Length: 141
Image 1 (tube, rainbow, N blue to C red):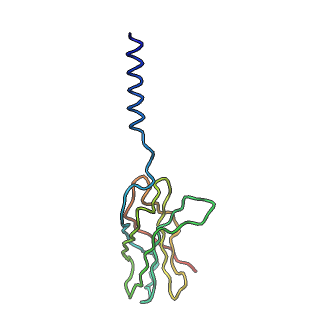
Image 2 (cartoon, rainbow, N blue to C red):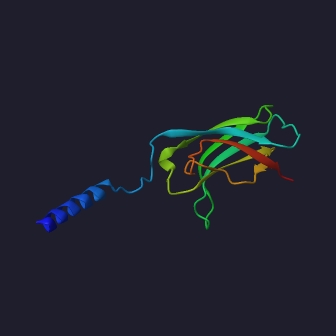
Image 3 (cartoon, rainbow, N blue to C red):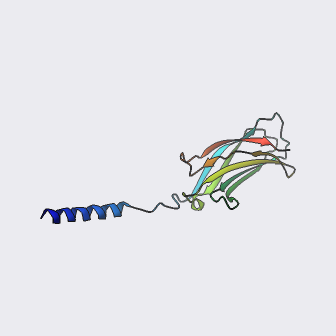
């Protein structure tokens, strides 16, 4: 009798555990989210009125392939100086929570790269689910 009860209880516990098990969702949220932050640099150089700031959210999961752009924010500074704020909106349907995402930025003057990020800035799927970043750019010669 004890063996039957033990077998039935083991079976029920197994069924419950299988029912609780679920595959990790590829897409967690539906809709639009925003990564907010600032773009800045240390050099004491003023930006011209027509400088362009570009901020990208990229999927950098595959080491053997170029990063995939998920979202892009682009603005002409119109005389604004650093720090320059940005709101980078992205579609959560494009996020795979098993992948790694990075935010990078650049400042272009007359179509030429003048400043860029030189560090990795993980967001969205990092341990903290980061949605605010302050990006420090470096000068390009």
